[in-house]
Image 1 (cartoon, rainbow, N blue to C red):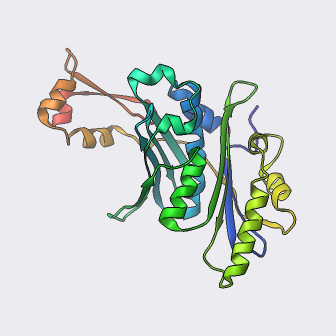
Image 2 (cartoon, helix red, strand yellow):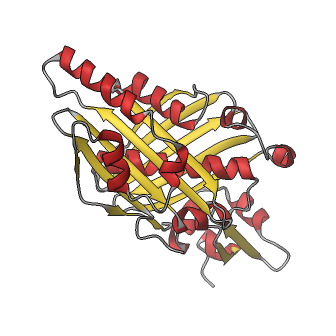
Image 3 (cartoon, helix red, strand yellow):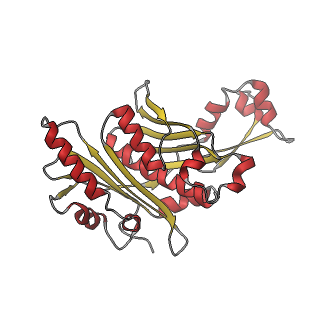
Length: 294
C-alpha cells in the first residue's frame, strides 16, 4: 500500500521560538534505492538513515544545486555518499570492503564506518566554488555524527533522529526528524531555554512514530509540540532520481590516462561503466572514451 504521507519533507517551525525543523518520511523511494544495491541489512539501514539526513539538511539550506552527505572511515562500510538536489531528488550508495562484506550483517553504525571523517558539501548551480565542511566522524550512530558536525563546524544547536528498517511487508521505510536553533534571538537566555524545552519534546519521539504510515506528519508534529504550537510550511515531495548520463560518464573517464582506459576494455573492445548510485550500466568502445574518430 502506498501512503499519501510518504516520500516527503515536512518543514516546520515552533511557535514563538527561533527554532525550525524538518520531518522526513520515505517509503517507495527508500525501498527502491536500498534494494537496488543488494546490501546486507545493517549497511542498507545505514544508507537509509543517510538518505533521511541528506534530505533534511539539504532542504533546510534552501538553494539550487547539490548537497552531498559523505562519510568515510576505516570500517567495513568505508564510504557512504548521499546527494540531495533542490528539486527533491535523492540518490545514495554505500561501499563495502570486499573481504569484509559478508561480516557486516548485524554491525552497529559506529562499527560499520569506523574512524574517519564526515563531510557536508554544497555545490550551488552557476557557482564554480564549492563549500565543504569536514569534521571527525564521532558519534554512536549516524544522527549523532551529524549533530557533532553542526556543533563543531556550524556551531548551531541541532538535533537529529533517523530510523530505517523493513516493515511487515518486507519493504524498507525511513523516517527522520531534525530540529535546529537559529541565531536570531537577541535574548540568549530565552534562546537557551527555548532550545532545551524543544529538545526535551523532540527526544520523546519513538522510532515507530517516525515510520507509522497511519500517523501523518502534521499529526506527529502536533503530538510532539502541541503545548506551544507548530507552524507547518509547504510539503516537498522526494524522488528517487540519479543525475548520471552517458555524457557525464565520458567526461569523467576521459580524465584517466589512455593506458588505463584501454585496460578497462574487454576482449571485444567494450568498456562497461556502472553508476555507483543507480547501478545503471553504460557501454562504450575504448575509442569513444578516448575521443577517437573512426
